[in-house]
Image (cartoon, rainbow over the protein chains, first blue to last red):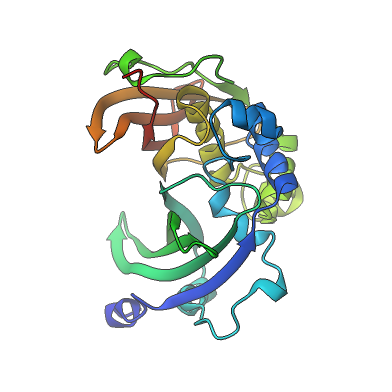
Amino acid sequence: MADDSLSAIIGRPTGTTVVTVERGQLVLFATAVRDDNPVYRDPRAAEAAGLPGIPAPPTYPFVMGNFGAYPELQIEDAPTGNPMAEVLGPLMAKGGIILHGEQEFTYHRPVFAGDVLVGVGTVADAYQKESKGKTMTFVVVETAWSDRDSGEAVCTSRMNIIHRL
Amino acid sequence: MADATLYFEDVTEGDEAPELAHVLTRTDLVTYAGASGDYNPMHHDEVKAMAAGQPSVFGHGMFSMGLLGTAITDYVGAGNVTRFTVRFARQTWPDEELRSKIVVTGKRKEGDAHLVDLDVRLHNAAGEEKVVGEATAAVPSRA
């Protein structure tokens, strides 16, 4: 793949998702990452820890778009597109594997049960390099989550996906 | 989980958080698949994983990061992490013991925030690194 077709996807939107953060889902997720902390299960424990509500475990923002993204919450005229699939689809047709290379979260405040959050995704970077005789294609997608009602920034997730052939 | 609040004044560069150690099971992978919505069969379907040339199912990278996140919040307190970044170095396999290693690399004040910087890693019993990264937490101060 030519580098210019890769760099052409930088800055393109990957979609906007509105999610409601549900308490039950946070319990399931805390259990799945083997966290038995009562702050994820009991609002009294969260309050005792100085938190205004039941928080989400730190990596929950990676998956919250998979839950609670109910149809009536979505923004109809939000930009759409799947530039990552446009780039990785043709590469996968040639073979190779997709790897999750790096993941970064920046938190402006914790995510809490009951939040309604808007996630706006953008391709932050896309590039290719040769390594040990393999062609590595990197696509970095950044999702900025903010509180739908107050507009305040909540967290930013940066995912580096690698196709290796 | 942590029994006591970690205060800024009690943290010294080089301090180590208590180790979290866990032997990865296939049940962990199924539980994480359901709780995350990641149903990639490489993480729960042994038949498909072996057909794809893998020796068995293997762990979600985000399970490793999540487990490390548990070790971090046990130390600094839930809701206190301000940044958490990792590189996924190796796959994880059922029956491997995954161990956290969290070391304080510095502490600083930024405005009103009392920040603690951490080197965070997850490795197996043989010392092979699975996840390598950094985290920052804003912890309470006695001042």
